[in-house]
Amino acid sequence: MSRYIQFAVIRFKSKTAYRFDYFLGILNTLLSFVVYYSIYKALYSGQSYIDGVSFSMVTTSFLISLGLGSAFHKNEMFLQDKIKQGTIANELLKPVNFKLRMLFEDAGEGAFNVVFNFLPTAVIAALFAHLSTPSGALDLILCIASVMLGYIVLWQISFIVQSLSFWLFSVWGLVTIKNVLINIFAGAYIPMWFMPERIRSILHFTPFDSIYFMPVQLYLGQLNEMQVALGFAKQLVWIAVLYVIGEVCWRCGIKRLVVQGG
Amino acid sequence: MRDILSLFFAYAKSGLKSRFQYKVDAIVVIFAVFLREAGGIIAMYLALQKFGTVNGWSIDELLFLFSLIFITYGIFIVFFMALRDFPDWIKHGDFDRVMVRPRGVLTQLVLCGADWLAAFGHGTLGLLLLLVSANRVGIEWDVKTVLYYVMCVAGGVLIQGAVFLTFSAITFYVLETGSLKEIFYWNMRKFAIYPLSIYNKFIQAILLIVVPFAFVNYFPAQFFLRKPDMAQYPGWLMYITPAVGVAMYLLAYAFWRFSLRFYKSTGN
Image (cartoon, rainbow over all chains, first blue to last red; front, side, top):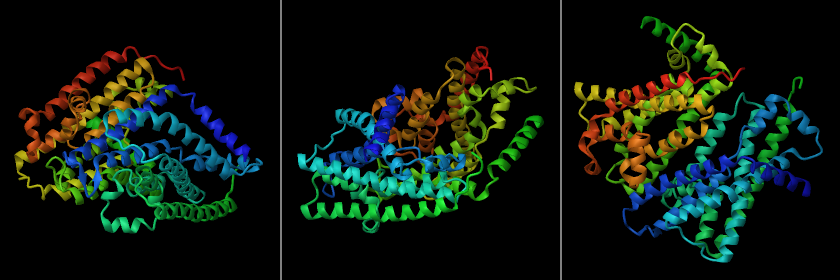
């Protein structure tokens, strides 16, 4: 295991090489937040609660889901490039589990972005937006745990789509479509509370609300013990289900992989 | 003129052919661009099911506002893709090739680069939004309004063209302008999609003066819709989009001509 953690640490360190990109990244995240902050400020137009949801809950939800969304953004053409260039053959020869290595490298990058992109953005946003404070220390810890599980859900979905590049000419289109669906249905573009009831009841049966909305609810302390347990169980079930799908795609893909030259 | 048209069609033909070499993939990419751009709109649509209006704008009126951004970008990218990706032209030495050909430098750049897939993705989204909203927002379409609409679209294209022409000219001095584009175009465009009046004064000032996206969609849409939030701006702003486009483009062109003499090949 320590070997894989090394992969994550190396990626984390290599990200520190690009200084200017930090500031640009923070600005990007912050401005996306400001757009939605402004829209919802206009929508609330001075009211403090709508349907029992306060404006600070909305801004907090946007900060967590948009902020983490941009922190977890990564190169999703990775697998396709490896396959197209044939370098995947070398990777498969190495005595490491390719998938696990990919997960840890991506997670290292994600961790870097959370520390150097998400947190600074949150601090700046707190200066002008009324954000909610975490409802308690335990809630904050649970929230962080749930963010990690949410990340794995997000990663698995990305892996499944990426692994389609064994069959397709390019997965760029599908990756983009997948990201739009996640942004809408995981609550990055619209707070889950305002999602029309019919759509929300369907979303309960999808992995989408396990990604950002579960951490948001934990942070705000909106769940009772039963719901917390159920939420974590749901995240774990989705991780298991998506793992199986990803593994099937990966194994079938590897079987039909033909690398020419290289 | 004839010469320029035939050049454009020759480039368009070869561009379309190469872009549509893998037909299924091209269609998936167009759909993906369409959906990526529509994502925020879908979220807005869902939110307005609950809230009704934003600053007095109903969903149909917003769709009309959004349509202008996408239609202008769809046209813009047919002509200005080379300027969008200009740092690559310099770095790869492609610009040298352009300079030794017997046509104007900018003419070639404008005619040859068309991102057809983006054009179809943005263009169809814009037209769809226009078709859905145009009848429902109560605009009376007659010769005058249609003419002004076309002029506004042309103005919007020129405004964005001028922004990219300026970036390209700056590329002659600093070689890499990717982050400038990110900050002053793409991030500002995120703001520009929604009604100007929802933002604080600072952001409004940027969208009015620094990167005047407000003239691409907000003020032209106000000309047709006359929403009450227009009261906080001088009324004549609704009428100057075409003039802003031409003026900005001429200024950017002058800056480009001036900067061209500082071009040094990267030697590839």
